[in-house]
Amino acid sequence: MAIEGQLRSVASANSSAVDLVTAEIRRAVLTGSLEAGKQFSIRDLAAQLGVSHIPIREALRRLESQGLIVMRQARAASVAPLSTDDLAAIYRLRYVIELPLAGSSAGARSDAEIAELDALLERSRDLDPDIAWQAHYDFHEALVRPAANAWDDRVLHTLWMAAERYTHLVFDPTRITEEERARRYETHRLLRDAALVADPAAMSQALRDHLNANETRIREHIAPLEAAP
Image (cartoon, rainbow, N blue to C red; front, side):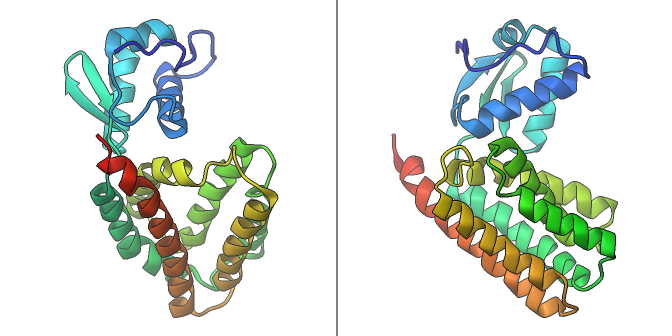
């Protein structure tokens, strides 16, 4: 259950302890520093992150609600395993919720919102993987924002965070060729173009095709990992 070297101390950071702990554990899960199925104790986490048990427990509860962590008992937890069934459930809900919202948002953007969409598209191919990854996340949020309400946002953010560990595994932004960077940019440029036209059906279909292609690639990648002992 030792996790030495996999997490960085957040004791000296100037922000909410719970937010910092959540972000650091989430980073470790997404990057694979904390592997799927990895078990650890709250005491070990507290020692390595340099905080008390209280923010650790709250952070783990947050991450459990996002599907990243499984609470085993009062003092232990583990990283949620990779699962094709889990992946299918996440994407099934994304199709149900995200597609109609993207369709309703098509052609309904102000000049400022269009400029933001363009800026996010450009940042999504930034050489800094952290900037590129955040821009990609924000780009998908911007696609549905004109039609989304507060509950849509809550549900979609949960789904996006749950999906992110799978997409990060396959579309790792730290290991990307220029050819792959260009391919990813082009697939999102097509979504940007569809978002500017008042054609809900076309926008929904473009996003469906995009998500389906991603889901297929991820499934092909994790199926052997799931089958491995």
